[in-house]
Image (cartoon, rainbow, N blue to C red; front, side):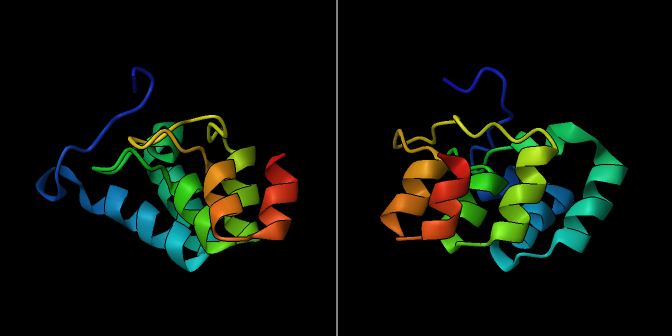
Length: 105
Protein backbone atom coordinates (compact mmCIF):
# COMPACT_ATOMS: atom_id res chain seq x y z
CA UNK A 1 0.00 0.00 0.00
CA UNK A 2 2.76 2.48 0.87
CA UNK A 3 5.50 1.15 -1.37
CA UNK A 4 6.92 4.58 -2.27
CA UNK A 5 6.52 5.94 1.23
CA UNK A 6 8.33 5.38 4.47
CA UNK A 7 5.64 4.40 6.98
CA UNK A 8 6.31 4.98 10.64
CA UNK A 9 4.65 2.09 12.49
CA UNK A 10 4.76 3.58 15.95
CA UNK A 11 5.80 6.75 17.71
CA UNK A 12 9.15 5.27 18.75
CA UNK A 13 10.17 4.92 15.08
CA UNK A 14 9.67 8.59 14.21
CA UNK A 15 12.96 10.45 14.01
CA UNK A 16 13.24 13.96 15.36
CA UNK A 17 13.38 15.44 11.86
CA UNK A 18 10.33 13.48 10.71
CA UNK A 19 8.43 14.68 13.76
CA UNK A 20 9.55 18.22 12.96
CA UNK A 21 8.14 17.94 9.44
CA UNK A 22 4.75 16.83 10.80
CA UNK A 23 4.94 19.62 13.39
CA UNK A 24 5.79 22.18 10.70
CA UNK A 25 2.84 21.03 8.57
CA UNK A 26 0.48 21.23 11.54
CA UNK A 27 1.68 24.75 12.39
CA UNK A 28 2.08 26.09 8.83
CA UNK A 29 5.78 26.64 9.47
CA UNK A 30 7.17 26.78 5.93
CA UNK A 31 10.47 28.17 7.18
CA UNK A 32 11.08 25.01 9.20
CA UNK A 33 10.01 22.88 6.22
CA UNK A 34 12.61 24.61 4.04
CA UNK A 35 15.31 23.91 6.60
CA UNK A 36 14.32 20.25 6.90
CA UNK A 37 14.24 19.72 3.14
CA UNK A 38 17.67 21.26 2.72
CA UNK A 39 18.99 18.93 5.42
CA UNK A 40 17.20 15.73 4.46
CA UNK A 41 16.08 15.86 0.88
CA UNK A 42 12.71 15.24 -0.72
CA UNK A 43 12.13 11.81 0.83
CA UNK A 44 11.12 13.60 4.02
CA UNK A 45 8.15 15.19 2.21
CA UNK A 46 6.41 11.84 1.75
CA UNK A 47 7.26 10.18 5.06
CA UNK A 48 4.14 8.75 6.70
CA UNK A 49 3.20 8.66 10.36
CA UNK A 50 1.71 5.62 12.12
CA UNK A 51 -1.65 6.35 10.46
CA UNK A 52 -0.17 6.63 6.99
CA UNK A 53 -0.59 10.41 6.89
CA UNK A 54 1.99 12.63 5.25
CA UNK A 55 2.85 16.23 6.09
CA UNK A 56 0.61 17.26 3.17
CA UNK A 57 -2.36 15.42 4.66
CA UNK A 58 -1.78 17.13 7.99
CA UNK A 59 -1.42 20.59 6.42
CA UNK A 60 -4.50 20.03 4.25
CA UNK A 61 -6.67 19.00 7.19
CA UNK A 62 -5.55 22.12 9.09
CA UNK A 63 -6.23 24.39 6.10
CA UNK A 64 -2.66 25.70 5.90
CA UNK A 65 -2.33 26.92 2.32
CA UNK A 66 1.28 28.05 2.59
CA UNK A 67 2.38 24.63 3.82
CA UNK A 68 0.18 22.80 1.29
CA UNK A 69 1.60 24.80 -1.62
CA UNK A 70 5.18 24.39 -0.44
CA UNK A 71 4.84 20.64 0.03
CA UNK A 72 3.06 20.15 -3.31
CA UNK A 73 5.73 22.12 -5.18
CA UNK A 74 8.47 20.11 -3.46
CA UNK A 75 7.25 16.67 -4.42
CA UNK A 76 4.49 15.75 -1.99
CA UNK A 77 2.18 13.15 -3.49
CA UNK A 78 -1.28 14.69 -3.51
CA UNK A 79 -2.85 11.30 -4.34
CA UNK A 80 -1.36 9.43 -1.38
CA UNK A 81 -3.93 7.50 0.68
CA UNK A 82 -3.47 7.09 4.41
CA UNK A 83 -4.34 3.93 6.32
CA UNK A 84 -8.05 4.89 6.23
CA UNK A 85 -7.96 5.39 2.47
CA UNK A 86 -8.10 9.20 2.63
CA UNK A 87 -6.09 11.55 0.44
CA UNK A 88 -5.06 15.10 1.42
CA UNK A 89 -7.98 16.28 -0.72
CA UNK A 90 -10.33 14.11 1.36
CA UNK A 91 -8.84 15.60 4.54
CA UNK A 92 -9.42 19.14 3.28
CA UNK A 93 -12.99 18.29 2.32
CA UNK A 94 -13.73 16.63 5.67
CA UNK A 95 -12.48 19.71 7.54
CA UNK A 96 -14.20 22.14 5.16
CA UNK A 97 -10.94 23.81 4.04
CA UNK A 98 -12.23 25.51 0.90
CA UNK A 99 -9.02 27.12 -0.35
CA UNK A 100 -7.00 23.95 0.12
CA UNK A 101 -9.76 21.95 -1.52
CA UNK A 102 -9.65 24.22 -4.58
CA UNK A 103 -5.87 24.10 -4.77
CA UNK A 104 -5.65 20.30 -4.55
CA UNK A 105 -8.55 19.68 -6.97
